[in-house]
Figure 1 (spheres, one colour):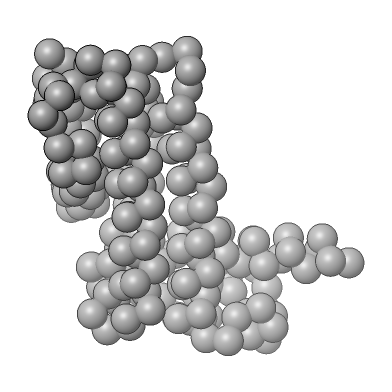
Figure 2 (cartoon, one colour; figure 1 turned 180 degrees about the vertical axis):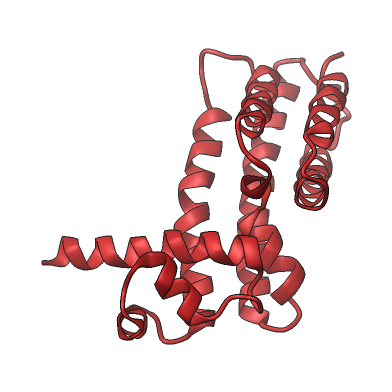
Length: 196
């Protein structure tokens, strides 16, 4: 019984997040979320106190596994630290090349643009997720520095923040233009930035 309860909650989170990603937080009502999940409206309130509560839970449900995959990719012992970073973003480039325009949209980007200043709890959650991502990248870049792949005077924390911010910009461009050129340009520049 507990598994079925979790499965339904996860279904609502996945389907509802997809709707919010496409339509935005304000453009999505609880009715659209439950329709996408194929459940009665009352079921939504069994799992979530409000749409804001849902959005916070969706951020955690979507990005906790993504952060775990990022950490795994940046810890791959078969590759050098710089090769790990480049392989991760090259894989993302291939991933986006296989998607349609509607799938380019970024849940965290959609929420942060629309809601960070309106609902402080969402802004704080987005900041926390992005900060964790930057910390993972900075740790990998520090390993690259110790391995002699980056200059000894490189500020790895600042470099990680720059790369993360640039990637968020790429995701914004994808949403606006439905064009893969920003991803390719990002990967090419990242290769030049990290290759001595």
